[in-house]
Image (cartoon, rainbow, N blue to C red; front, side, top):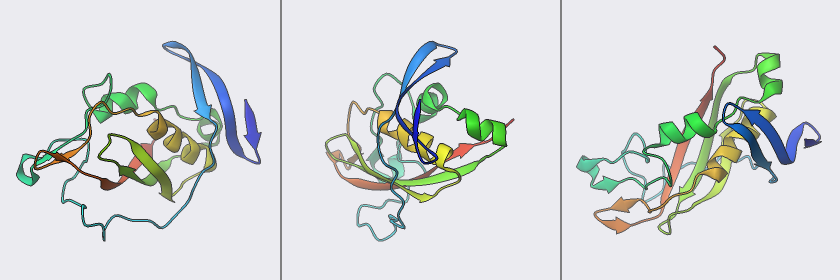
Length: 153
């Protein structure tokens, strides 16, 4: 485990209920006020990872998972330092879903704590899509804003 200042950095090895897992924190956090409201491809869909027949929107398929909730349940980790300190909250992220089926340009719009922010970006970077999002049956680029919630029980 390594850090730069207070920020986790590098490749960490973590013990999970599924065995040892590599956590890739080898990236810099980017904070921005970027939002999707002025984007011409912004849709009135609640979740870009769910199909919306009324909007003729087909969500991208997630490699190895039926939906985003299962992916997040399996891959999100609550950082130990944040857990020990009782830190919780929603990390708001904005990113591009490309017509090539990739997630790019991940930025944090509203962070909570560097550990939670870093984990939120890490898990989105790990998300692999097996098909792009479609609008009217055609692949399109989409700007997506979404929260990842970290709540202590």
